[in-house]
Every structure is written in structure tokens, then in C-alpha cells.
Length: 175
Image (cartoon, rainbow, N blue to C red):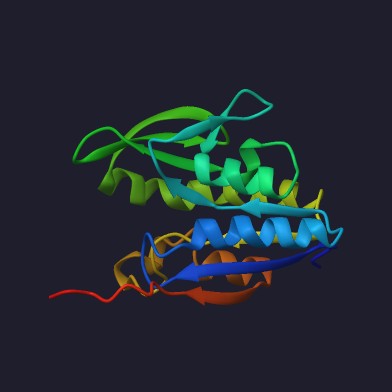
């Protein structure tokens, strides 16, 4: 039986860099202004730009901005998996704020099923302190090559019981 007492709303995008992070930050402030205990959550983020949390761990800067907009301290649980690109082929893997190691893309995809436990643990922790959790997806849920090992988009939305809002870019694509 699911005993969660909070609600979740998820923003997914038509791709990367369509504005999901900024919209989540804006919604964090709106809901905070309305008196809700709102918390941001992004299961997995890829960024070399990190912020230090109260626990001394690292999360993506976008989640740090979102936490500030929500008027809440930064927590490693707001971004449990942070990938920091190290080369054209690999990334440093930071799990719940601590460096786990480096992984090439294929190796990372094999790790994701194990990392899902960390994601769910962090989601529960964030939710335990919230009335509303704003979940930010990554990339696009339409990337069918990633669906089997998804830990950030539809699998997370289903687990969270979240309504999903699709965010699209307004810039025309030039071909």
C-alpha cells in the first residue's frame, strides 16, 4: 500500500534545453507563495555545473535554483543522480551527492537499474517534507532507445502517480 501524503506534478520535455528547469523554478516560487511546502526533484541530471548542499554533497545548479525558488535548503535528494561529463565518452557519476566513480555511456545504462533504488529513496525523502513535489524529467520521454532503462521520465511519473505536463520549445527548428 502506498502511504505517500504528498502530491507530485511532473514536467517532461520534447527534448533537452526546452525550458523545463526554469519553468519548475517558477512553479516552485508560485506554489511557495501560496503557502505550500514545495520541493523540486530531478532523478537524473547531466551537468558540469554543480552546487553544494547542506549535507556537503553536489546537485545540479538548476535544482539549486529551484530549491531557492521554493525557499527550502538544498538537499542531495533533490537530484540523486548527477552525471558530470568528463570526456566525449564518459561521465563522473555522483549519487546522492557523493562521487560513485566514472562510467562510459554503456556502463552507465547497465547501472541504471541499481540507481533506481537511490532515486526512489530520495523521492520518498523529498516527499516526506513536502505538500507538492515538482519532478523534472530529462531529455524527452520519446527517446525509445532509453525506455527500457528509464529512471527519469515515464517510469518516474508512474511511480510518483504524477500528472505530466509536456514542455516544448517555441524556437523554430532550421533545417
